[in-house]
Structure formats: structure tokens, C-alpha cells
Length: 297
Ligand SMILES: Cc1ncc(COP(=O)(O)O)c(C=O)c1O
Image (cartoon, rainbow, N blue to C red; front, side):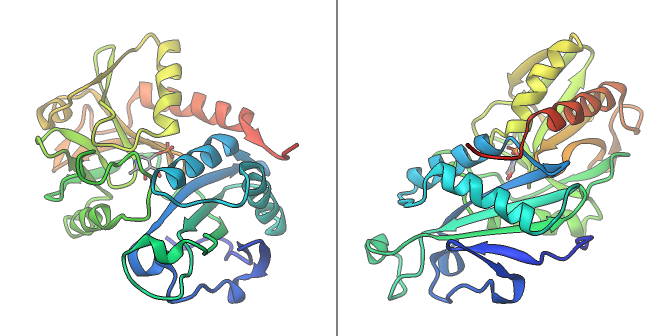
């Protein structure tokens, strides 16, 4: 679970600083209340995959929760590339950008205390391969439900991740790799960190974008599935559907496409990574290398 290379240089509020100097205030809203948005990105051959898409989502989510960015999207994209370059990592790096509402003069919930405060912008780069094994992972269904849009909309990619963290603790305690989270109606939503797909025959099903964070990897899988003559369905997925699936996998930028071989102690399909999943991963990796960005105009 350790990074292969410790992050050496971080971006903090406009400056590249050594890790030891990358410190934020204890008043920072991200620290005090999780009042922050973030993105997780991946580096392939020195370029950042879907850089502009991630930066766009960061800005949209910041706007949605009322964080006013004074940096432009171009500034942030450039800051990400500069931080990657400063760390001299060409392959297998994970990038995390966090933007909090900033460091106000006082603590409290009212966002007006941040009216004249700059958001905190922090970027870290870790030389880290995808951590989940491509031979397949085990899921355990969590008692913690994914928040519906009526509560905290999961489309808002915020640092409020306690529900997912509690679910992951349950999965750890159950000896599983990831938690399978249900929505408040008891249907499958996503895992604590990734979107879910199942395959039954030639039908590829994934939960509708109600109680999930509909990721870029999920979207790319829709396009790649058509190449394999799979029929894509965004639909309600029950736990029964999961247990009866031929294949199952999860998707996300940081861990790519990962086969699921067991859920709640039941083997999925043959109990080994399935052929469609393997082929989709191979195509995904080809696309990932094509869609990287190494410079911003
Ligand atoms: C809860 C959740 N679901 C799904 C994803 C996958 O999104 P993407 O494919 O855009 O990385 C993420 C990524 O951060 C996530 O946090």
C-alpha cells in the first residue's frame, strides 16, 4: 500500500514546495469540515490522462458548492503538469488535487467568513501503480448506504467521504478489498471509490447515475463496450443480479478497470477475471496512453 516513490515536490497555493513545507492551516475549511473538492488523476508516460476533463469537473464541483476560484482552468491544468514535471515521474503516477474553501480568520460553518479568502489549492504527485490486483478483487456489501442526491449529491466530488470510509472499514473487517455500497432503496450503487459494471450474456449493466459519482472511466467503458458488441444498460442493479453475473468489474481513473471475482463470499462467474473484462482493460489502457496531455497552450 506504500507509494513506490515518496512525493518530493507539491504545489501549494501557487508555489512548488518540498513535501516538508507543504503544510496548511488548522483553520483550513478542508481540514475543519471537509469543505473541499478534489480530483484523482493518473500519469501515463509523462502525460496526464484526461487532464482537461478532470480540471473541468473540479471547477464545476467547486462552483456547485460556492467555492470561487481565482485561478483559471488553464492555470490549474498547468500547475498539475508543472507538479508532475517537478517530481520527474514518467510512469505510474497518481495525482491528487484538492481545493478547499480556504483558511478563514475564524472557525464555524457559515461560508461568509470565507468571503474574502482565497481557496487553498494543493496538488500532490505519488509514484504509485494502480493498487488493486488485475487478477481480481473481493467485495463485501456494506451496511452504509451511498448518499442519494436528496442528501449529499454524490455527483459533487467533495472531500466529504466519511460514508465511503466507514464502508471501506467494514470491507476491511470482512477481509474484502472494497465495499459494495447500496443506494437507499437497496439497489447497487457503487463501491466506496469506483463505479460498478456487471455482464450477463451480451448485456453490460451499470447502475443509473442517481446515487453514484458517474466517472470518466465509466463513460469510456460505454464506448469500448460497443466495440465488443456488448449492449450497455444503465439500469437498476440488484444484489441478485450481481450474484448471478457472468463477469463483474469496477472502474475509476486511479485503479483503471479491475475485475471483481467474489462478492459477499460468492464467486462471480467462474471466480476468475472474465474475458470481456480483460479485453476492455486492454482497450482502456490503449486509450489512456492516447488521451494524455503533456502541455497546455
Ligand atoms: C465514489 C467514486 N466513484 C467513482 C469514481 C470514478 O471516477 P473516474 O472514473 O472519473 O475516476 C470516483 C473517483 O474519484 C469516486 O470517488
